[in-house]
Amino acid sequence: LGLPALRQLLARRLSAHGVEASPDQIMLTESGTQAIDLLCRLLLEPGDAVLVDDPCYFNFHALLRAHRAKVVGVAMTLSGPDIDLFAQALAEHRPRLYITNSALHNPTGAVLSPVIAHRLLKLADQSDLAIVEDDIFADFEHAPAPRLAAFDGLGRVVQIGSFSKTLSASVRCGFIAAPRDWMERLIDLKIATTFGGGRLSSELVLTLLKDGSYRKHVEQLRTRLSRAMAETAGRLKAMDVMPWIDQGAGMFLWCRLPDGIDAADVARHALADNVVLAPGNAFSLSHSAGRFMRFNVAQCADERIFRVLERAMAASRRKGASQPGSGRA
Image 1 (tube, one colour):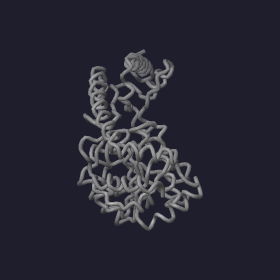
Image 2 (cartoon, one colour; image 1 turned 180 degrees about the vertical axis):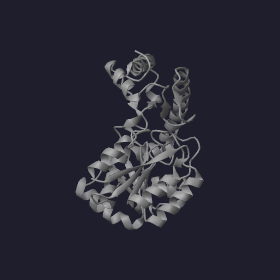
Image 3 (cartoon, one colour; image 1 turned 45 degrees about the horizontal axis):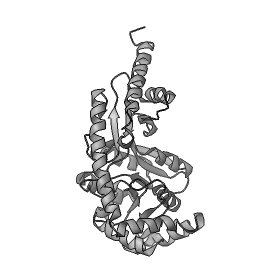
C-alpha cells in the first residue's frame, strides 16, 4: 500500500474535501497515470466501453486504447457532463467505467455542480457504473468544488491524486482511494506490475506535508497562477481568442479561436517557430473542438508565444480564405 505515515496524512487531507477514507483504503502509486492504469487492469476486459468527457485529457484516450477499451465521449458543459447525453450513452453502450475531473477539469476548467453530481451518481447506481475521479488539480482550487467521491462515500467512485503538478513532474508520487473490498486485488496488481513504489518520493512528500513547506508553497503557487491566468486571459482576449470560462484558478485556459481559424493549422505553423501549442481536437474524441486551443498559463510569460500565435493565426486565416468555396481567391 505504501508508506503508512503518508497514507494516514492523505486520509486527513481527503477528509477536508468530504472524502472519508481510512489509510488502508489508500494505495500510493508513482503517478496519477499509473493509478488509472491499475484501475483499468482491475475493472476492464478488452472491448468494455468506457465513458470520458469530450473534451478530456488526451492521455485518457491513449491509455484506454492500450487496454483495448471502447472509448465513448460525452459532451462537457460548464457544470459537468451533459447529463442527458450521459444517460443516453449509458443506455446505448453499457459502459463499465467513467473517468473524469470534478474540479478544474482538464482541458476546459469546468467545475462539477452539485445538481449534476447527484444526477450523475443516481444514473451510475442504476447502471452499475464505476467512476474514477481524477483529482490531481485539487490543490490549485481557491474554493473546493463538489466531489463525487464525497457524495458517494467511496462506494462506486474511486478518487486518485498526485503531487506531480504542484511539486514537480520528477516527484513520482500519487495515490488511489478506493472501496475497501478492492484493495487486495489492487495490491496484487501493483506487485505484479511494479513490485512496489518510489519510496524516496513518498518520504519527500511526507516531509513537505508535515513541516508546512507544502502548504506555503501551494499558497504561493495559487497566487502566481491566478496572476498568470488573468494576464494570459487579457492578452488572448485582445487577440479575439476567448476563454470558454472566466476562471481564476488552475493552470489551463480553454479558448475559442476567431472565426475562420483552425487550431490544428495554428499549431502546425507555431511548431515551425519552435512553439508547441495544444489544439482542441487533441482532447476531443469526436474531433468537434477544431476552433479551440488549450493554453498553459504557467508557460505564457514568454512574449514570443503571443507573437508566434498571432503569426500562426494570420497564416491559418489566409489559408482558409484561399480554400475553394471561401468566396475569395
